[in-house]
Image (cartoon, rainbow, N blue to C red; front, top):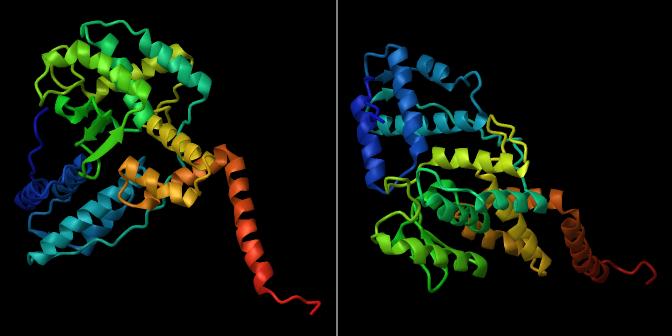
Length: 328
């Protein structure tokens, strides 16, 4: 696919801004997409001078038809940072205001035990087509998503050098926040990855991706999305579509919820478990992980009951000690 060429009056500044971000280690594709949208908007509005007025800002701030709030939020706040950058450089631009992030009502699909079994039966029975590796690489790839809660880009970006077979860990480099992190493989997954390595790794250099297409290049997301829908169909799991899932990313939600449940089932306080899970998932802040607390409590109400009982025991006894005895 040809690289987009910026065409607005801010074209050079936009490209320089992106180059500076990427040179600093920022790899987010979303911010580039938002700035491409800003560039196209400036062309459509026939802005011929490097000036961005309040009129332009009000038009740009409008939420578009069928634009989700998440996309709207990302578009506006990315452009705000760019406009602030232009303002510091002396350009006459109106810096758009912040818009409040409202979150989303989207509920991820948390798979039942029956659905998990059916899905992986479909994965494991898949026959290779043009790519002879598919039958052995898909069981590994999809189990990494399921067991480790990795994002799809993180998983497809794993290179041979990132896999430590002896320690049973994988280094993730292509992360959302551009910060490397390790994920630990359980014994079953580690054994599966070792078997896969015995069959394939001798063909790979250290810099090669471990999941490849028929030509030996990196697998693309589109192929994995198509296979995911195929496995859902074979497992009898309805696919709603239009982003309502079940999506590939729902394996990450599934792993997070069940990991949180497992931590609390061992007796760990859920607010002690929260930062552990947050770090493992690679979230920037604990607030990004907090949604899994709510989701877990919805699915497993007994956890909240257990937590409330613990609070009553602790604070109830304190209250009893602090409050005066009315009979004295």
